[in-house]
Image (cartoon, rainbow, N blue to C red; front, top):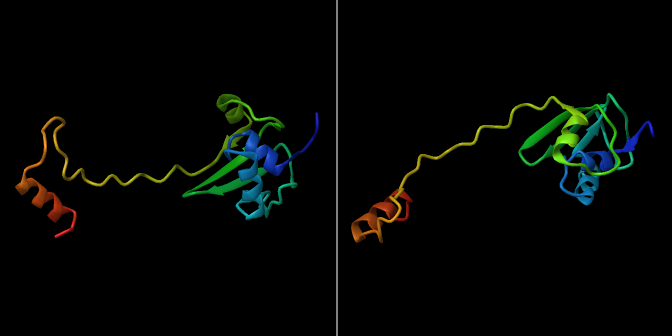
Length: 122
């Protein structure tokens, strides 16, 4: 077995990117770092390397445990790395305003005015 794998292939294989193309584009855009350095798609990833993948609102920090060349299922993919990522940000749940009981029927004119006022339309 090889002692290294391309960064874009490994990121895709362990499901940190949805497609190989997205993994390659993330590398080119500078969203992937290997050993603290900005990674090109062809940067070699070895066992023990620290890989940081920035995507969306979340940053994933993982340490490579196993090298993969092919995309695998979720469980084997999680076994291929050790996750050191900070917990995901808590979702802000807006207070459920203007919630109507299911089957309550069409809102009355008064209720529609109250809804519009809550939503800042009037």
